[in-house]
Amino acid sequence: MKRYEKLADQIAALIRSGVLAPGERVPSVRQASRSHGVSPSTVFQAYYLLEDRGLIQARPRSGYFVREHAQRPLPEPDIDTRQAETAEVDVSELVFSVLGSLKDPDTVPFGSAFPSPTLFPLARLARSMAQSLRALAPQAVIADMTEGNPNLRRQIARRYMASGVRLPLDELVISNGAMEALNLCLQCVTAPGDLVAIEAPAFYATLQVLERLKLKAVEIPVHPRDGIDLDRLASGLARLPIKACWFMSSLQNPLGASMSEDKKAALYDLLHQHQVPLIEDDVYAELYFGAQPPRPVKSFDRDGLVMHCGSFSKCLAPGYRVGWVAGGRYAEQISRLRLMTTISPSVPAQAALADYLQHGGFDRHLRKLRHALEAQQGAMLASAARHFPPGTRVTRPAGGYFLWFEFPAQVDSLQLFQLALAQGISLAPGPIFSATRRFGNCARLNHGHPWDARSEQAMAALGRLLAAF
Image 1 (cartoon, helix red, strand yellow):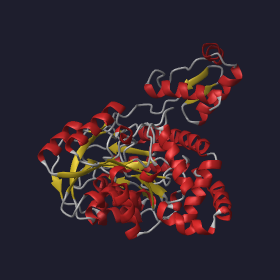
Image 2 (cartoon, rainbow, N blue to C red):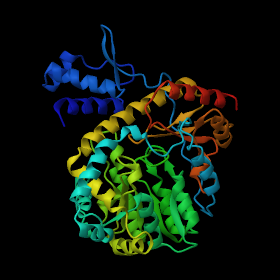
Image 3 (cartoon, helix red, strand yellow):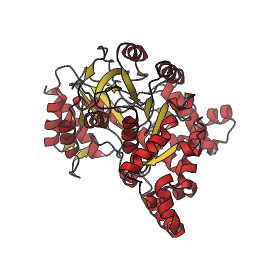
Image 4 (cartoon, helix red, strand yellow):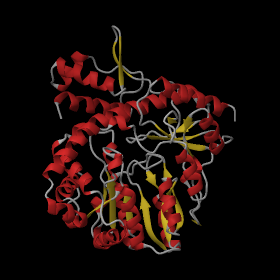
């Protein structure tokens, strides 16, 4: 990173931690230059970058100030403390009705599961595809179907090293996106009728997978900031024959919660004690806002109990459908099961991603993407504070592109979904994130699309609908 980028990240960390509060003046260029030992030019560049991220703003003849992301900050949602019980899963029809709302390109995509494709380097990826196909040896077209592209596996393993995980290449299984990896992991360690511990709220695709495999859910509450409730999980493991856990330890969807390193270590120790495998869904790992990547639970794994799943779909190339799993002790079983079902992800797509990771400037792209998502999060938070009714609560994730809203108790988010859709606005209502249809007054909104007047108008329209309940 360049010097001005490091300085910008240091100041951004002070803003996120609350040391520099909304509306507060940041150090003058002269002060910052002296205290950080850099030139005024470097400070200006850092402040311009922070402006682009939406964190500070210049006021004529007054200097730079921390942006008022929310003129009346909305409080954090409450954690659901109800006791975890087993539940049959039946949410697919509801989920498909929500997903169907996204087909119209004129709909404001607050309900989408992806960031805007305009944030991805699609042209550069196309060049990588062309270059890698020209260089692809004929025999590799067949060989890479079983093992996966060797260069891609090496590039993924190097990124694991950066997060503190030394990963043997033979533990990596390339898959058709993370969803196939997650499905394969679950199939390896469960049978129909088994109990699986999941988050509450949980990503709706988790529920659909359990429904398809005829598995029962044990919902474990998630704190909107700190992640999974370990006491409730310990109680569930002691009372119930749970066969696997499927959790997001960082930037959990839909809440955006991230567990601390100490809590991740404690989670691993608890599962190790009961010898219950963890399927760690970590598809948002690259979308953190701070200077350091979050450390996965996989980094604490001593005996292959964690199956760590990742993907390029949320940070680089959604349509390429390339994901992976670091399968631990289950790697060979996962690989064989994949060969029995889909055989292989696209070999050309794997080669293209390998070329891009090696030559295309992936980290530069990620920095730009993170900055855009952080600025857009600030814009949505500020808009919600302006337009949503008193009693509204919202999460403040340290990354990703989702906000979870808890509305006043009288709001029915399924009805809100229908009313909003009639006005050309999609959202993801709370009940699709629960096996027991909880969170009826909650919704997930996506801020992963560039913020514009249309976005602001949609938030104002949602505010009017909410006020009418």
